[in-house]
Image 1 (spheres, rainbow, N blue to C red):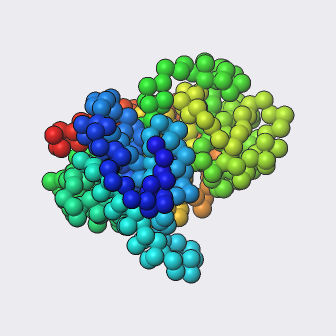
Image 2 (image 1 turned 90 degrees about the horizontal axis):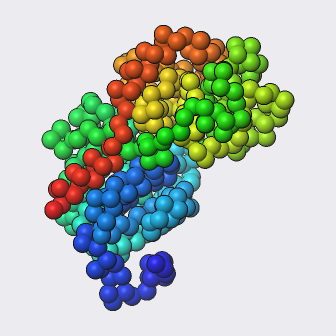
Image 3 (image 1 turned 180 degrees about the vertical axis):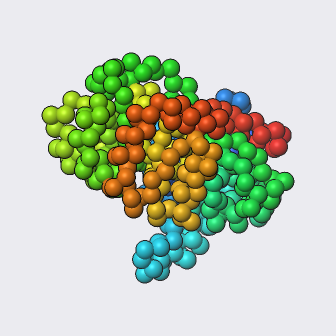
Length: 383
């Protein structure tokens, strides 16, 4: 369907979505894969339960949801909105105008789509959508993926119909009676993967008789990870370990040059088939975003988390400590990564007893069907 009626503010006499499905769902948010992929998983679960449902996404123009959502087969409308820039206050001058414009765009979308329910998954584009829906008395649902709730979700939670969270202890952010612990929806390619370790290692051109370390720092990579691996790369071969190293684009050339001639290292800027990476790995190094944690717990891999230190409210450290306190993972501070990360992961890779403990405890936190649980609850409430 063309977006022109929305983008050009043309008059639409008949809502273009009416009659397409018995119920209509608006999913709002994005900015990162940690928001987008759970939203797509929830949308897929709704369609599985109610194939005639009509689903529309709302995101921020220029952000990755504008590409990833259509790839998943759903329509998305983009808002002219931006988040608060913490590093440069002068860049926030136009923020009030963008916020007003986004509310006008949201009003038009809601009036024409007429959703029965709005589901927010986080990211600054979700705030105007849920806020306006709440003012119109439309049922609103929030999925908070982190162990430390974002400020927008805390504000929206006061009037939300239901709030889905990943872990316990969230009553300090939200009304207790509205909370439901569901876990975080994980991409079906990972949650339903049947890839064997042997197949996965063959995919990466690695040997089956060596333990494998997976290093994944998000789509852009992680500077501290890359510098630590670069500096300590010889230690992996010395300890009979092989490495799957996702560098991100900024470090790709350096990473490939550093691994030249090393048969125990696979390196690339991005891993498109993460189910293979998880299947191949014995231990994992990762940032502590909510979705990374959800995936690692579900596949039950011993992990060393290095929280991104500039995340809002330092929520990645809170996420990681939630696992550390349950003896389900290890943590290294970003500022200490260059000195401690490689030695910590090698020590873990050589300690089968510690690996077993982390695997057993992390597997208890893994949830395979969070998307279905959320979809069923939404459908039950709005029926």
